[in-house]
Image 1 (cartoon, rainbow, N blue to C red):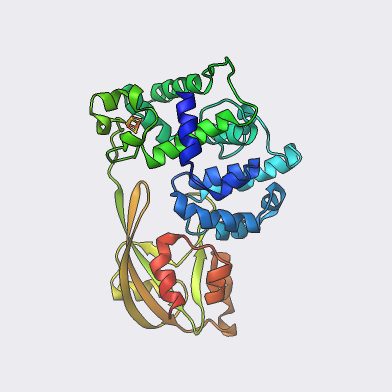
Image 2: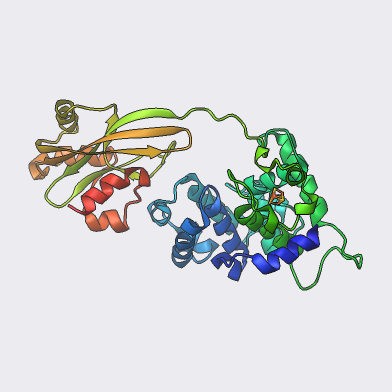
Amino acid sequence: MRRSLLDWYDNNRRILPWREDPAPYHVWISEIMLQQTRVEAVKGYYERFLKTFPDVKSLAKAKEDEYLKVWEGLGYYSRVRNMHRAAVQIAEEYGGEIPASYEELKKLPGIGPYTAAAIASIAFGECVPAVDGNLLRVFARMTGWRESIAETKTKKAAERYFQEIFEEKTAKGKTGSAARNVPGDCNQALMDLGAAVCLPNAQPLCEKCPWKKDCVSHRNHEETAYPVMPEKAARRIEAKTVFIILTAEKALLHKRPARGLLAGLYEFPNTEGELSRKEARDFIRLLGLSPLRIKALEKAVHIFTHKEWHMTGYEVRVDEPEAEEAETRKRLHRDGFVFADRKDVLTTYPIPSAFRVYSDHFLHL
Ligand code: SF4
């Protein structure tokens, strides 16, 4: 099975920027970006991230706004926060060198068993399968596994299953070849197989699969009955009102709290509920600003994993708080508000894509 998998990989592998030079730092960045994100969406971010932070030390030295800005739009921002924390730890405790073993890697923030296995196998050749949703799906279909893939025992069984395949002996009795990194290539082959052949939420392309003769679900013509998924909780819907508060050239932004959803990112000021025009004016006055004109904007929906924001928007022109209103400025600043022009929005302040409709509106005013 191992040989047929690697032969298939040699003929079908995807050409990806991080595979050109599988240095530990490159594998780490790409694997974190690829969690919850499509390969096509990651490519541009990967290039930009490496250009801005070419190594562990430069990432360790980065300021919060800088690394969040480079990540802007990629979502799940705790990933980059943890990468920064891990980079600081690697710089301080490991002399800037990413640790070379699965067990050591798992001690770093944001590096769980999957990412540790991917880095350890692809960058260091350690024989450990990187079991994520793709591998769980292939495992469940190959074996006709009837338990939910969310169960710990499913994950353990999949790890054992793939470990045995990775360690299979060749005809000559060898477990590896000097010419290739067998564990790294096995993991990458399975990632590609899961993405291109054993498709999620669709009929897999079994005729192209190197393992079709050994696959239980294929033999029984019930490929799409697997994997057994856990029941999903319904997403909670939250109504919000978002404000583009404008002075002559600038819009007011607010830095979100250091903890929780979208922590540390900048947002257009907003509040719970769907506010009427009058309520919207009152909200602006509460900020200490004087609304001059108010205009309703298009509504927007943003979907997170567990909730949806249903947003109503208003564009509000206000008097610029001048010197005589220094108190207002000071208070806004203290509460995490900043006035930003278009260049600041484009290059300085990280704004999550939940507010994309409103940041685009501001940029095109
Ligand atoms: S034979 Fe089909 S169902 Fe089985 S692992 Fe291959 S692609 Fe998936």
